[in-house]
Length: 192
Image 1 (cartoon, rainbow, N blue to C red):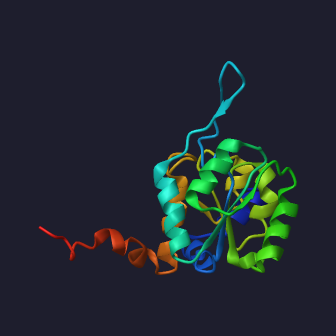
Image 2 (image 1 turned 90 degrees about the vertical axis):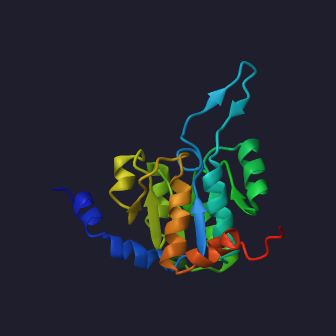
């Protein structure tokens, strides 16, 4: 057994829940997390990405519950800027290859301690953040080196509901889930 496997084995469902209770800022990688990691190029070189609407609603639920959201991505994309704008994500850092530096800048700007941050990433470029946050998550199709070092690996794949799963997990850990979905369950003001 490697030391990496030993490190991963210390995490349990209860420790992941405990870590998620502290999250005040949730940060998302894009390729492989908000998308399935595929890059589609048209004949003119334009790039296309596909986002999951369930993930978007999860991000909105986090925000409505008072949890700040951000994106830190190695790629630069107008598509990501548009999606972030649509979701009300105001902290968007793209074209970032030194994710540690971006993370340190963001947390200093927002004055949020590292242990009160969460991050979901899928590749080794994400490790400098994943190893610093209080709640680290990945996806089942993420790189093995990443999956071994996080508190939570989603059941859903990147771009296929993983972000929603993480958002729901955080809201449930913080006992905010029922309040978050309550407005959608209210049928008391129906006019017939």
